[in-house]
Length: 637
View 1 (cartoon, rainbow, N blue to C red):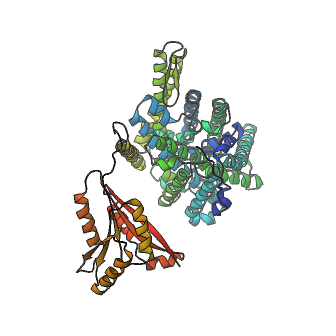
View 2 (cartoon, rainbow, N blue to C red):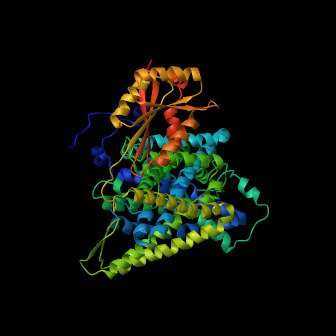
View 3 (cartoon, rainbow, N blue to C red):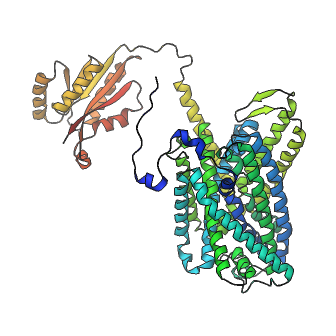
């Protein structure tokens, strides 16, 4: 028999904040198309052009302004790496139409350890994505309004809370909300670089007026341009690629045909990201822009390209500030989905897989906002201090994902035409072009592994050591959670259990502090359970005990009463000693029920005036097999 409930959640504060609850049947209507998908899943990658070139120049500044020329070939190398990643993940999207992030690919092709490592790396990267993008957004505001510098941390935390609330409203509404600022940013950024390129070819671009010198003044002794320095700058620049995997994780959010729409969105994102990354780096070098904590590279480029701090400059700063804030939305979409996958597999608490009232993974969203806010507070919303922690995790996940795909194509080549093998995340089939696809993913795995090593080595002393320790630590924690669920499942399993045993005896114990209506209500309930009932009174005052015994002779209906003398005026301890004695005599199939009468008052404050015996016993006896604690409420004014 099935019955559909007519209950609807009533309006509440959460309704006003995040909207009315949605039914499960509304899920298909919450999917998105390519236009909205680009805004949701690409905002992180596209917005990274606002800080990645700057972080690259900050590293090169140690060798003086003459080393800034290396930024252009480094930007080209990053664009080549981006192309390789786009080709690799485009294959992943079509192979895993139900979502094929690094965790799923590694789980199906490389095993549990690789999957947990990828999951740990990605979850950490999502947290850092929120912290870095929001901190960079605040840096843009500080560039235009230096007076708010002291309040940057709390402004950043406020932005995180704002993004969290929008995402709690659901994927579709969040996408519509973020689409306008995302495309406004693209419009203003392309306008800036187009005007800059036109003026460059016309010979009227000039140099940035009064560039900030704070970074250059720190390097009183210049370093030589070494391979280590160049690789360190390259590692900082590759932070522009951190959002590439988001689309492959969120394939299920797209409308049908999901894989086709997600693949086209990925290609569009790659073209936009590569173009802006190269042009911004190129123009920054031409105008002599200097990296700074006081004024961002985008600010210097905009005021130089438009030759003023007028309306276009303000619009560029506003658009960049908003898109960097919106970039955190990519993490708020990807992290809860990944957390739900891992929770379904038993590597995270099961609650992370539950959808909230708006069909989003509310617990994952809230957890991400909390941890990212703490990170912003600890690192004082400094992009430069957060960057060394960033990207190493995502490049590790890139490597595992591409290695898993390469191994998958190798397995595909071992199958005969028409042969299929069902795997957890997809169906493995023979592919005639398996060797070519394996080559692409294999090359992607090799390159991203090299970048991950470069990042780990060059940024190790700057803070990357924290990530190197945390990733395996998180993987170990996830493994322990999984072991717990497996242990519980084994103990609850009915396999080889046989027929359910029938209880031979059911003892019921009623602790009483007096004889009144509440006591009789508990006694009536106890008679429904068993005829073997014992009332127990802990005697602290003999006169009071005599009154209770006299009343029980009248109202106890023949049920035996045991008096426990307590010379030290203790109540719980003598009662527990008596229960322990019964427990030692209990046979394997016997049950002891403790039925506790409990006063419940209509006024919350009045409850504090009554002892909570049932709560105390429940906490103490909860782990004792064969003992059941039952509370019988008696409502009073």
